[in-house]
Image (cartoon, rainbow, N blue to C red; front, side):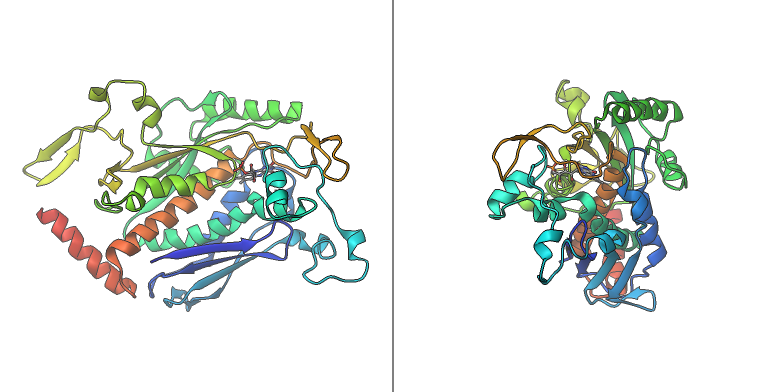
Length: 390
Ligand SMILES: Cc1cc2nc3c(=O)[nH]c(=O)nc-3n(C[C@H](O)[C@H](O)[C@H](O)COP(=O)(O)O)c2cc1C
């Protein structure tokens, strides 16, 4: 079983992430992880925080001489902003520390602030904000960077792009090559592969900036090189579609998930939706008439490209704050404002890539097992041969 966990707070010392169960012998590049972290930080519409942080991953366990050892891998990412928060969030109390606190007493609608403070019985929401913040997704992206390197050993790649902000849409399918080329770019983009559509999407983000508002949208994650047979129909919690959906929905501000052409499928007759089955006798292989299912049938990968989309709400912290209540006085008050982004769809797409990579890596480990990469590869190669002979 491949397990992963994150710890860390938005303004704390650092973020910590662990990955347990990765076989030994997987080549690991820290540069590749840093590149993923960089991609998460970019994106048209990000706020001031990204100017403070330049994330770098430090691997402290489980990788030696650029290869996994089979032991749990622990990654640390320092928070550069911590130097401004050492007296605000000390681990141990010190005399006079109450004066240094930055209580969040006016909970922000759309955040975990109020429900979290009540649930954890805290007088104000500072500690809730610290953990609920999407800063945590930095740790997920670092782990996703490890998962991607494992998947690459089996020829599996995962990418994302932005297909909508507000009402501005890409409006056409994007090829794998376009998405891959876009992911290589060094400048700050909105993550859309089409220059004309990106200009329309940027205009929506600019309008949100101007008016003190925020805007959501839709990202698409794709994965190719998947063997037939990851995930299983045999039980509700082994279905890969359900596991991917949970992974995507666990990303802060993601409120909807679509697998394949689910939205379109819900509006048309069944004869237009299924991917017909064909067989090439010369090649001795099956192929499909389309890929509306997004590469999954019955919760099992069917060998086609995986396609998963995430729908983001506009982020909740507004420069023009919404109505709230002061937790001390219980009087009406404007919600607190902390430095904030305007549009996070491109960053959320990168986080979603990481989550998809982690879930796929879990499925690969489950199916092919192995304590070493060599053993996993042997199992994988044997299975691919069996599929060919089917
Ligand atoms: C990459 C990323 C960055 C985010 N940045 C902000 C932000 O700057 N301000 C904000 O209000 N919400 C931001 N969010 C969303 C909040 O973290 C999220 O809405 C909040 O924790 C409540 O969770 P929920 O929306 O999933 O219910 C961000 C989300 C992501 C994925």
